[in-house]
Every structure is written in C-alpha cells, then in structure tokens.
Image (tube, rainbow, N blue to C red):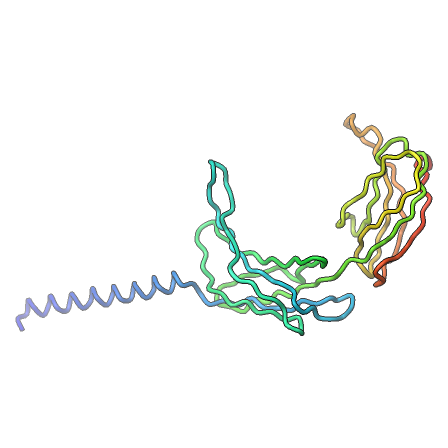
Length: 231
C-alpha cells in the first residue's frame, strides 16, 4: 500500500471514529440522563402513610399561540403510592432552553405540601417527601346582628392566611350556618370583619377574631353571636 493511500485510510478512520463518538454523545444527549424522584406521602397529623396517592412529574415547554405565550408542556410520568406511602418516578432528565420540570401532588380531598424544596438534579436520586391531610370542618352557627356595612366576611386564619377561602354575608340580621374547612390539630383564629370606606381609597378594617384550636374530629360545631356594631 502506497504511503499516500495509507494517509487517506488513516484520515478516513479518524473521521469515522470522530463521527461514531459524536453520534454516541448526541444519542446520549437526546436520550437524557437517567434520574429518580422518590419519596413518601403521609398524614403526619394521624401518623399514617397514604396509599394510592397520585404523584405526577410534568415538564413545562414554552410556546406561542396567537402571538401570546402559552405552556405546551405536559405529563412526563405518573405513579401512585404503595401501601407504605412510597413512590418512585424514573425518567430521563433532558431540558432545553426555557424548559423546566414540576411535581404535581394535589389530590382531592387532601391538602398537601412538600416537606422540602423539590429538586430535579440530573443523574441523582431526588427525595421529595409530602405531607397530605384531609381538612377538618367547623360548623359555625351564627347569629348576625347590625350588619350595615356589608358584606361581613368570615374566614379561618392560619398563620395570616385564609387557605380555604372566605364566606360573605350580606343580610343585616340573620341566623345562618356556615361550614368551613380548617387545618387539623392547629392554632387558628375564626375571623369576622367588614371594610369601611372600601371604595374611597382609605379602607378601615373592623375585625372580630376568636382563637380556636382544631382537633382531628371530622366536624366541630361552634356557636357565635356576631354584633357588627361592637367592632
């Protein structure tokens, strides 16, 4: 074999090796990096795991529709917890620019939250434990008087948040029963308030707040006389 031909063969082999190497790298990149998200879902108030709780891994993909930004993402994988409350999601981690993962773990009638920030570190086992509980109910038997600056607003305050919404009462004098949800085994306040001068840029909040400690009973019945002229 001539020297010139040997050079051509060696050069061809070098190009082929580089092509195969690049192809393997590209294939690995396209496939993504094997990654795991796992954890436990439990009701810490009752001290028990939750079986059959759905946990979903999703991917957010930005796109444009009708000249407006939209999310074209969707579900990557979905699992349910076993009898011990454990779940495992195996997936190939691959993100392009402006893409991100999210973990969806909300299932009626539970309220749920992750114990720690959710992480999606590629190539690792990411642990996300979840607290989930069923809210208790407070049945409020109300005797409303002098509700002249309506609406009278009723809400269960936990750490300065009305997580389960509020109710509005417009009647001046009425006996009424509300059934509201609350976090179990927690210090909350049952708030009644109305806003004076609300439409004039300088509202004044008139508040009546009653401290209450919830327990694990499904329904607790409470009676209140609420005279709006006294607060």
